[in-house]
Length: 346
Image (cartoon, rainbow, N blue to C red; front, side, top):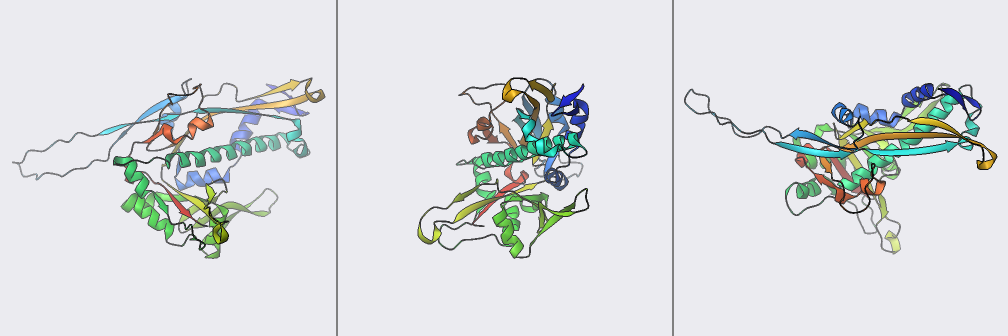
Protein backbone atom coordinates (compact mmCIF):
# COMPACT_ATOMS: atom_id res chain seq x y z
CA UNK A 1 0.00 0.00 0.00
CA UNK A 2 1.48 3.33 -1.04
CA UNK A 3 1.57 6.27 1.34
CA UNK A 4 4.08 8.66 2.87
CA UNK A 5 6.58 8.38 5.73
CA UNK A 6 9.03 11.03 6.90
CA UNK A 7 7.66 13.26 4.15
CA UNK A 8 8.54 10.91 1.26
CA UNK A 9 6.46 8.47 -0.81
CA UNK A 10 6.45 5.05 0.88
CA UNK A 11 5.46 1.67 -0.53
CA UNK A 12 5.83 -1.22 1.92
CA UNK A 13 6.42 -3.81 -0.84
CA UNK A 14 9.25 -1.79 -2.37
CA UNK A 15 10.64 -1.13 1.12
CA UNK A 16 10.63 -4.85 1.99
CA UNK A 17 12.44 -5.71 -1.25
CA UNK A 18 15.11 -3.11 -0.51
CA UNK A 19 15.36 -4.21 3.13
CA UNK A 20 15.86 -7.87 2.19
CA UNK A 21 18.30 -7.09 -0.61
CA UNK A 22 20.55 -4.77 1.43
CA UNK A 23 23.98 -6.43 1.30
CA UNK A 24 25.49 -7.60 4.59
CA UNK A 25 29.19 -8.37 3.98
CA UNK A 26 29.57 -10.17 7.30
CA UNK A 27 26.55 -12.42 6.76
CA UNK A 28 27.76 -13.13 3.23
CA UNK A 29 31.16 -14.06 4.68
CA UNK A 30 29.45 -16.46 7.11
CA UNK A 31 27.38 -18.00 4.32
CA UNK A 32 30.35 -18.29 1.95
CA UNK A 33 32.45 -19.96 4.65
CA UNK A 34 29.68 -22.54 5.04
CA UNK A 35 29.38 -21.85 8.78
CA UNK A 36 25.87 -20.36 8.59
CA UNK A 37 23.33 -22.35 6.58
CA UNK A 38 19.75 -21.49 5.62
CA UNK A 39 17.86 -24.60 6.68
CA UNK A 40 14.88 -25.37 4.44
CA UNK A 41 13.50 -28.05 6.79
CA UNK A 42 13.40 -25.66 9.74
CA UNK A 43 11.96 -22.89 7.54
CA UNK A 44 9.07 -25.15 6.51
CA UNK A 45 8.38 -26.07 10.13
CA UNK A 46 8.22 -22.51 11.42
CA UNK A 47 6.05 -20.99 8.72
CA UNK A 48 3.04 -21.68 10.90
CA UNK A 49 2.43 -20.10 14.27
CA UNK A 50 4.62 -22.39 16.37
CA UNK A 51 7.93 -21.11 17.75
CA UNK A 52 9.35 -24.46 18.95
CA UNK A 53 10.61 -27.01 16.43
CA UNK A 54 12.26 -30.44 16.59
CA UNK A 55 14.39 -31.97 13.85
CA UNK A 56 15.80 -35.52 13.67
CA UNK A 57 19.40 -36.55 13.13
CA UNK A 58 21.17 -39.87 12.53
CA UNK A 59 24.46 -41.00 14.02
CA UNK A 60 27.47 -41.69 11.81
CA UNK A 61 27.54 -45.32 10.62
CA UNK A 62 30.15 -47.31 12.54
CA UNK A 63 31.13 -50.81 13.63
CA UNK A 64 33.17 -53.73 12.27
CA UNK A 65 32.40 -55.32 8.93
CA UNK A 66 32.18 -59.09 8.32
CA UNK A 67 33.99 -61.46 6.02
CA UNK A 68 31.93 -62.00 2.88
CA UNK A 69 32.83 -65.59 2.10
CA UNK A 70 29.49 -67.26 1.52
CA UNK A 71 29.50 -68.83 5.01
CA UNK A 72 29.65 -65.99 7.55
CA UNK A 73 26.36 -64.43 8.67
CA UNK A 74 26.06 -60.69 8.09
CA UNK A 75 25.49 -58.72 11.28
CA UNK A 76 22.88 -56.00 10.94
CA UNK A 77 23.38 -52.93 13.16
CA UNK A 78 20.61 -50.53 13.99
CA UNK A 79 21.10 -46.98 12.77
CA UNK A 80 20.96 -44.74 15.84
CA UNK A 81 20.00 -41.13 16.09
CA UNK A 82 17.94 -38.65 18.00
CA UNK A 83 16.41 -35.21 17.83
CA UNK A 84 17.46 -31.66 18.54
CA UNK A 85 15.10 -28.79 19.24
CA UNK A 86 15.31 -25.10 18.52
CA UNK A 87 13.34 -21.96 19.17
CA UNK A 88 12.13 -19.04 17.07
CA UNK A 89 12.34 -15.58 18.55
CA UNK A 90 10.25 -12.63 17.49
CA UNK A 91 11.45 -9.06 17.81
CA UNK A 92 10.12 -5.63 16.85
CA UNK A 93 11.61 -2.16 16.59
CA UNK A 94 10.09 1.19 15.77
CA UNK A 95 11.75 4.35 14.47
CA UNK A 96 10.49 7.88 14.01
CA UNK A 97 11.49 10.75 11.79
CA UNK A 98 14.52 12.12 13.64
CA UNK A 99 16.35 8.79 13.24
CA UNK A 100 16.53 9.30 9.50
CA UNK A 101 16.36 13.08 9.10
CA UNK A 102 20.03 13.38 8.15
CA UNK A 103 19.69 10.70 5.47
CA UNK A 104 16.67 11.97 3.59
CA UNK A 105 18.56 14.43 1.40
CA UNK A 106 19.83 11.68 -0.93
CA UNK A 107 18.46 10.83 -4.35
CA UNK A 108 16.99 7.59 -2.97
CA UNK A 109 15.52 8.38 0.47
CA UNK A 110 13.64 5.07 0.74
CA UNK A 111 16.90 3.29 -0.05
CA UNK A 112 18.56 5.16 2.82
CA UNK A 113 15.79 4.17 5.21
CA UNK A 114 15.77 0.49 4.20
CA UNK A 115 19.57 0.39 4.41
CA UNK A 116 19.50 1.85 7.93
CA UNK A 117 16.85 -0.64 9.08
CA UNK A 118 18.70 -3.58 7.52
CA UNK A 119 21.98 -2.63 9.21
CA UNK A 120 20.18 -2.33 12.55
CA UNK A 121 18.82 -5.89 12.30
CA UNK A 122 22.15 -7.19 10.98
CA UNK A 123 23.89 -5.94 14.12
CA UNK A 124 21.22 -7.43 16.38
CA UNK A 125 21.44 -10.77 14.59
CA UNK A 126 25.21 -10.97 15.02
CA UNK A 127 24.90 -10.02 18.70
CA UNK A 128 22.52 -12.94 19.24
CA UNK A 129 24.82 -15.35 17.43
CA UNK A 130 27.72 -14.40 19.73
CA UNK A 131 25.54 -14.65 22.85
CA UNK A 132 24.26 -18.09 21.78
CA UNK A 133 27.83 -19.29 21.38
CA UNK A 134 28.60 -18.07 24.90
CA UNK A 135 25.56 -19.99 26.16
CA UNK A 136 26.54 -23.37 24.72
CA UNK A 137 30.12 -23.02 25.94
CA UNK A 138 28.72 -22.85 29.44
CA UNK A 139 27.68 -26.52 29.10
CA UNK A 140 29.82 -28.80 31.29
CA UNK A 141 29.52 -32.28 32.74
CA UNK A 142 31.35 -34.95 34.69
CA UNK A 143 30.90 -37.59 32.00
CA UNK A 144 29.63 -38.25 28.49
CA UNK A 145 29.31 -35.77 25.66
CA UNK A 146 29.04 -32.71 27.89
CA UNK A 147 32.39 -33.52 29.51
CA UNK A 148 34.08 -34.20 26.16
CA UNK A 149 32.62 -31.00 24.72
CA UNK A 150 33.95 -28.87 27.57
CA UNK A 151 37.41 -30.48 27.48
CA UNK A 152 38.08 -30.60 23.74
CA UNK A 153 36.35 -27.58 22.22
CA UNK A 154 37.72 -24.87 24.51
CA UNK A 155 41.39 -23.90 24.62
CA UNK A 156 42.33 -21.37 27.29
CA UNK A 157 45.97 -20.35 26.95
CA UNK A 158 45.50 -16.96 28.63
CA UNK A 159 47.69 -15.86 31.51
CA UNK A 160 46.65 -14.23 34.76
CA UNK A 161 50.19 -13.05 35.47
CA UNK A 162 51.85 -9.82 34.41
CA UNK A 163 53.05 -11.46 31.19
CA UNK A 164 50.15 -11.73 28.69
CA UNK A 165 49.81 -14.81 26.50
CA UNK A 166 48.70 -13.45 23.14
CA UNK A 167 47.53 -15.51 20.18
CA UNK A 168 50.23 -17.17 18.07
CA UNK A 169 50.14 -18.62 14.56
CA UNK A 170 49.53 -22.22 15.68
CA UNK A 171 46.73 -21.69 18.23
CA UNK A 172 43.72 -21.91 15.91
CA UNK A 173 45.07 -24.96 14.08
CA UNK A 174 45.83 -26.72 17.38
CA UNK A 175 42.31 -25.98 18.65
CA UNK A 176 40.67 -27.20 15.44
CA UNK A 177 42.63 -30.47 15.66
CA UNK A 178 41.76 -30.98 19.33
CA UNK A 179 38.07 -30.31 18.66
CA UNK A 180 37.43 -32.30 15.49
CA UNK A 181 40.61 -34.28 14.72
CA UNK A 182 40.70 -35.42 11.12
CA UNK A 183 37.57 -33.32 10.47
CA UNK A 184 39.34 -30.06 11.34
CA UNK A 185 39.17 -28.91 7.72
CA UNK A 186 35.45 -28.24 8.31
CA UNK A 187 36.42 -25.07 10.20
CA UNK A 188 36.44 -21.97 8.01
CA UNK A 189 35.33 -18.93 10.05
CA UNK A 190 36.80 -17.09 13.04
CA UNK A 191 35.05 -14.33 15.01
CA UNK A 192 37.56 -12.33 17.06
CA UNK A 193 38.10 -9.12 19.00
CA UNK A 194 39.97 -6.27 17.35
CA UNK A 195 42.81 -6.70 19.90
CA UNK A 196 43.33 -10.28 18.76
CA UNK A 197 43.09 -9.21 15.12
CA UNK A 198 45.74 -6.56 15.70
CA UNK A 199 48.09 -9.16 17.19
CA UNK A 200 47.65 -11.36 14.12
CA UNK A 201 48.04 -8.34 11.86
CA UNK A 202 51.33 -7.44 13.55
CA UNK A 203 52.48 -11.02 12.98
CA UNK A 204 51.65 -10.47 9.29
CA UNK A 205 49.13 -13.31 9.44
CA UNK A 206 45.95 -11.27 8.88
CA UNK A 207 44.88 -9.27 5.84
CA UNK A 208 41.79 -7.03 5.86
CA UNK A 209 39.33 -7.15 2.99
CA UNK A 210 38.17 -4.03 1.17
CA UNK A 211 34.95 -3.07 -0.58
CA UNK A 212 34.42 -0.52 -3.35
CA UNK A 213 31.29 1.56 -2.73
CA UNK A 214 28.89 3.07 -5.27
CA UNK A 215 31.14 6.14 -5.58
CA UNK A 216 34.16 4.03 -6.48
CA UNK A 217 35.85 4.59 -3.10
CA UNK A 218 37.64 1.57 -1.63
CA UNK A 219 36.89 1.09 2.06
CA UNK A 220 38.22 -1.45 4.59
CA UNK A 221 35.79 -3.98 6.07
CA UNK A 222 35.65 -5.71 9.43
CA UNK A 223 36.51 -8.84 7.48
CA UNK A 224 39.89 -10.45 6.94
CA UNK A 225 41.71 -13.67 6.08
CA UNK A 226 44.01 -15.48 8.50
CA UNK A 227 45.58 -18.93 8.18
CA UNK A 228 42.92 -20.03 5.70
CA UNK A 229 40.05 -18.76 7.86
CA UNK A 230 37.62 -15.99 7.06
CA UNK A 231 37.87 -13.64 10.05
CA UNK A 232 35.12 -11.34 11.32
CA UNK A 233 36.36 -8.67 13.71
CA UNK A 234 33.77 -7.80 16.32
CA UNK A 235 34.33 -6.35 19.79
CA UNK A 236 31.07 -7.95 20.91
CA UNK A 237 32.85 -11.25 21.61
CA UNK A 238 33.48 -11.97 25.30
CA UNK A 239 36.32 -9.99 26.84
CA UNK A 240 36.82 -9.68 30.57
CA UNK A 241 39.48 -8.46 32.96
CA UNK A 242 41.76 -11.09 34.44
CA UNK A 243 41.68 -9.33 37.79
CA UNK A 244 44.42 -8.74 40.26
CA UNK A 245 46.49 -5.64 40.78
CA UNK A 246 49.81 -4.12 39.90
CA UNK A 247 51.21 -5.01 36.49
CA UNK A 248 48.29 -7.30 35.58
CA UNK A 249 45.38 -5.09 36.69
CA UNK A 250 44.63 -4.15 33.07
CA UNK A 251 45.12 -7.64 31.64
CA UNK A 252 42.15 -8.95 29.62
CA UNK A 253 40.95 -12.30 28.35
CA UNK A 254 39.54 -12.35 24.80
CA UNK A 255 37.46 -15.14 23.26
CA UNK A 256 37.87 -16.10 19.61
CA UNK A 257 35.23 -18.40 18.14
CA UNK A 258 35.92 -20.89 15.36
CA UNK A 259 32.94 -22.05 13.30
CA UNK A 260 32.77 -24.72 10.66
CA UNK A 261 30.59 -26.08 7.91
CA UNK A 262 26.90 -26.17 8.83
CA UNK A 263 27.54 -25.28 12.47
CA UNK A 264 24.83 -22.59 12.59
CA UNK A 265 21.37 -23.20 11.12
CA UNK A 266 19.04 -20.32 10.45
CA UNK A 267 15.59 -19.72 8.99
CA UNK A 268 12.97 -17.00 8.78
CA UNK A 269 9.61 -17.40 10.47
CA UNK A 270 6.25 -16.14 9.30
CA UNK A 271 5.48 -12.46 9.91
CA UNK A 272 2.16 -11.25 8.53
CA UNK A 273 2.98 -7.54 8.92
CA UNK A 274 6.78 -7.12 8.87
CA UNK A 275 6.60 -3.36 8.31
CA UNK A 276 3.99 -0.66 8.74
CA UNK A 277 3.82 3.08 9.20
CA UNK A 278 1.98 5.13 11.79
CA UNK A 279 1.21 8.80 12.27
CA UNK A 280 1.05 10.00 15.89
CA UNK A 281 -0.49 13.45 15.72
CA UNK A 282 0.09 14.18 19.44
CA UNK A 283 3.62 12.98 20.11
CA UNK A 284 6.21 15.77 19.77
CA UNK A 285 3.56 17.85 18.08
CA UNK A 286 3.14 15.17 15.42
CA UNK A 287 5.56 12.51 14.22
CA UNK A 288 5.81 9.77 11.60
CA UNK A 289 6.73 6.28 12.82
CA UNK A 290 8.10 3.20 11.06
CA UNK A 291 7.49 -0.17 12.77
CA UNK A 292 9.47 -3.30 11.81
CA UNK A 293 9.05 -6.90 12.96
CA UNK A 294 11.04 -10.13 12.47
CA UNK A 295 10.70 -13.79 13.44
CA UNK A 296 13.74 -16.00 12.94
CA UNK A 297 15.85 -18.72 14.46
CA UNK A 298 19.60 -19.02 14.93
CA UNK A 299 20.42 -22.56 16.00
CA UNK A 300 23.82 -24.05 16.93
CA UNK A 301 23.72 -27.41 15.16
CA UNK A 302 24.13 -30.35 17.53
CA UNK A 303 22.47 -28.69 20.51
CA UNK A 304 18.92 -28.66 21.79
CA UNK A 305 16.87 -25.90 23.41
CA UNK A 306 14.46 -26.77 26.21
CA UNK A 307 11.63 -24.47 27.21
CA UNK A 308 12.38 -23.38 30.80
CA UNK A 309 10.02 -24.71 33.45
CA UNK A 310 10.35 -21.66 35.69
CA UNK A 311 9.63 -18.04 34.94
CA UNK A 312 7.22 -16.53 32.46
CA UNK A 313 7.14 -18.14 29.02
CA UNK A 314 5.47 -16.34 26.13
CA UNK A 315 5.19 -16.91 22.39
CA UNK A 316 8.77 -15.67 21.97
CA UNK A 317 11.72 -16.25 24.33
CA UNK A 318 13.36 -13.25 25.93
CA UNK A 319 17.07 -12.74 25.35
CA UNK A 320 17.64 -13.85 28.94
CA UNK A 321 15.91 -17.18 28.22
CA UNK A 322 17.56 -17.57 24.82
CA UNK A 323 21.09 -17.07 26.18
CA UNK A 324 20.73 -19.12 29.37
CA UNK A 325 23.09 -22.11 29.37
CA UNK A 326 20.60 -24.05 31.53
CA UNK A 327 18.18 -24.11 28.57
CA UNK A 328 20.69 -25.79 26.22
CA UNK A 329 22.06 -29.35 26.04
CA UNK A 330 24.44 -31.14 23.69
CA UNK A 331 23.07 -33.84 21.35
CA UNK A 332 25.80 -34.66 18.79
CA UNK A 333 29.12 -36.40 19.28
CA UNK A 334 31.39 -33.40 20.01
CA UNK A 335 33.82 -34.46 17.28
CA UNK A 336 31.00 -33.85 14.79
CA UNK A 337 30.47 -30.27 16.01
CA UNK A 338 32.80 -27.75 14.30
CA UNK A 339 32.37 -25.06 16.93
CA UNK A 340 35.28 -24.14 19.20
CA UNK A 341 36.65 -21.24 21.23
CA UNK A 342 40.13 -19.93 21.97
CA UNK A 343 40.87 -17.68 24.95
CA UNK A 344 43.99 -15.49 24.91
CA UNK A 345 45.19 -12.19 26.36
CA UNK A 346 45.07 -10.51 22.99
